[in-house]
Length: 245
Image: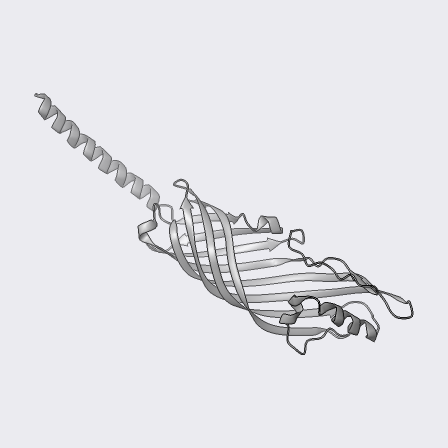
């Protein structure tokens, strides 16, 4: 057999082998319709958030994230420090649930769920906090401050991001922007007896905090339990590590 014929046969075998290998690789990749992940950016705030994502079609996936937050974390509101009224820092704990739908752009995909994407999300958060401290009235009597707060937030929004496939199974998900709007339900319960003049001093002290400017105009802390509901812009972002299977 001549060299030319051998070269042609070898080339045909090589092309067939490459095609079969590519098909096997594509089949293997297409089997990865599930991803689990952990939100890396939330850990610094004391939150452990796990994610699950399921591919429904060539471009569309659905996902669910569940996060548990401990009081430990870098985000805290500094306490009040006035002559008659002193409190500790305000920390919070609770959980959040985030279902979402994504659409992946085909031209940026290397595997099944990677590349640029956009989508919509719903986020429900339930956080608890407390405010402890001491108060002294004008005649020098000392009182203990102990408030329990409950904050429930339901928000909806859009999102855009990029998932970088670092291998067939591992990817880093960059949620670049997630603007939305949220409904905040805020309630506060007083667990200690305090004189009436405390609430005037307390509300005057809180005027320094822009956070409380977001509450209803008629919202003032008082001896009875207080509730408020308001709507504010919301925003999501984050970095997560994902594993496909």
